[in-house]
Image (tube, rainbow, N blue to C red):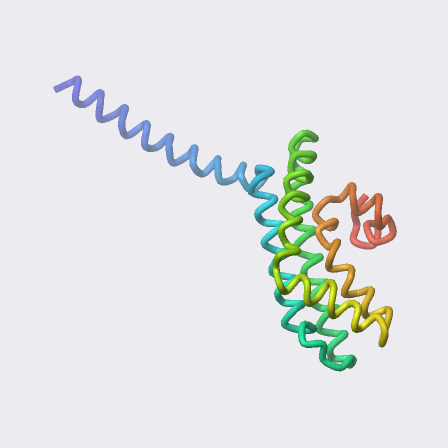
Length: 168
């Protein structure tokens, strides 16, 4: 009987410890993300951005202030999401940062097969360039918007933009 009581105590203790461990794991998961999970999140946000951009400009509607505002609002909301992911990446060690960038680069190569990407980044951007080069430039920035999730890349390629959003 004492043996069963001892086993019951061990089981209860183990279950209790397991709960604490899972809570601690979920907390550490928020603190540090794996390169694979980070890549999946960044790609998902990027793909969502391209699909939404396609919904806005894929059919090449006439340029208007309303259209420009929609594209700018989408760009800013995606930048906000990418910066959050950049902060997650910043918690990685240097090796994981390099690994995450390499894996993201490979995964982004696949976006070109998405019809939304071709309609927006190629067709619509070229179409609007003839009418409003600044608007076309705003559209083309979606092609490199993932740099907001890789702070060292943003600082190198767009130092003023990095400074504007508080990346030092």
